[in-house]
Length: 486
Image 1 (cartoon, rainbow, N blue to C red):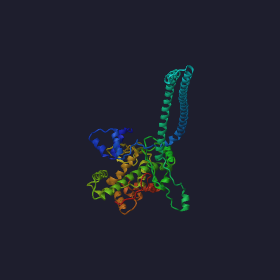
Image 2: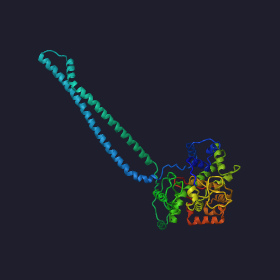
Image 3: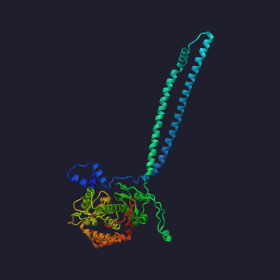
Image 4: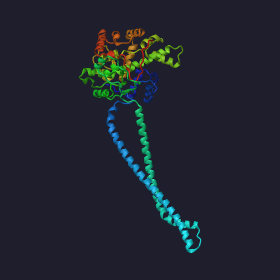
């Protein structure tokens, strides 16, 4: 039975695989860390988390459905907003009418006051004080309108305030929507567009010219970490199509999109077309291998800078000690660290992944994300079905696919059985030669019990599937780096 790991156990297992000393020290000292604290430490050390996703590619599918619904909502909102504004204008006009009406009444009162005074003075021949007459007439005429003005004034004021509040709320909502739309436009799209036009191989042969570099700006692409969704192969293929991810473009441009799957699709073996099955496997595994290689390359650059200095800081010394422990180098031997801290050729990694996982269809790959069939005698693993009586090993399981790639590269760079592999790779570096898989396959005869037969199979896989084309591939969101000679 497959053991279901909790989310916290998966995070702790990732900490062990990536050798995060902070978490391991807390656990050794029997101190409890919350899940949030473990996540924070892992993210701080740039460890990919299974449920971490900047922006899922699945939104590409739902966007197409949301667009018509969103436009309908906007049209309805605009209709009610225009209706509200019309009603508000009507009440504004009513208010202005009442104000002008009251002003006209006061003018009339003033005129009556003056006329009354003149009539009384002429008719009865006695003087009437203008102030007293004004008070009497004003009180008499204005009293008829006092109640109506007060009641109607308060009523209209309440209505106007309600509409002003509604209009302000709608204005604020419109501003928020406008800011969100501007922010989305500034962010890079899910689909990195290829600016140069696609040309067929026949056209390229006829012209016999080198491809023009039409890409002016740097490639910018977010990392897509797809969670454990048990995606089917058809869904994955449609996702690749949506983001224009195909191996022909990768072979030509030497760039691959940073799309990281955490597991293989369960129905990958149901693809009848062998070529399509292999290409899908390569599309899933290639970004994981390239990402780990670039991480190692960055460490090589940093090591070169530190070792070239006369004085090093405490932070640099701490980093060196961590790398010496990670690569299992004794006596602080920097030369040995230089040999071990290097990339694994992409063609070899792809060939071994295909061989050990059955192109992503083996039980170990599907149940435990074990791409490279690494053995374990102490850790959690999967029991092989066919195992000798004296064999107590298991196949090491991993929480995500990238953790398997990480462990595989640590294995080749630290295990004593692959010292010849590291030595030959180091000599190629010293002679300014490129690191190619076909030049190093023969040094991996100790990886499997079949020895030389195993290395011949690796060569055959590399040649038949043209895996050497991916040796210099880099991620689309990375800066082009030159090989170092340490």
